Image 1 (cartoon, rainbow, N blue to C red):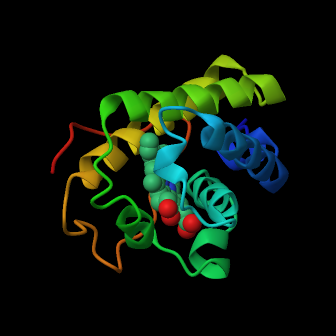
Image 2: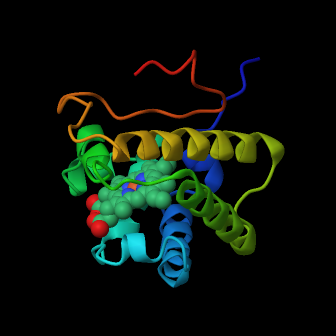
Image 3: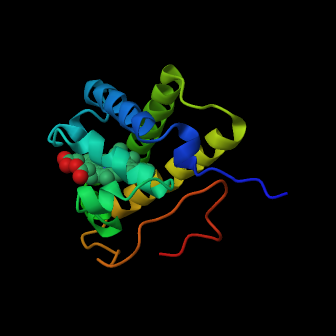
Length: 157
Ligand code: HEM
């Protein structure tokens, strides 16, 4: 018998989990000596937008693309020219995973494996794009999708 596999969004607990996680995470980010300054000018809606983005990528409702009028290209555009580096990327990921642990976000091996894989992928893409001057993503490119096991092949610029 086929068993229904939930999306990562459903498994994590839906909208509320993503909103709580990113709200708490960016509180920590702003107090961080290394990456706090990078986010000094972010809007008050930044945590909500990132929560919407990741929730949508994880199979949740299309809030980033509809409510926030975002797209994959719009998200990438926020990173262009920011000149991020590996220490900053690593701190971002470490702080997010620490926040997830403190909040009791699902920690079964399968979910955490998928979450960490996505954060590694997305944060490394953010660093690469932060050194570009032009957006490599076309306006009409679809949002990325992330499930229980991804990537599919090596990085191609
Ligand atoms: C999976 C990884 C990531 C995702 C999904 C992501 C997502 C986003 C999104 C959706 C925005 C736009 C927010 C808005 O509309 O207000 C944004 C902006 C931004 N992100 Fe990321 N991001 C990621 C990784 C990173 C990393 C690793 C860094 C730096 C260490 C970073 C630095 C920034 C900065 C500086 C902005 C602009 C802030 C501003 O408006 O002043 N991002 N990100």
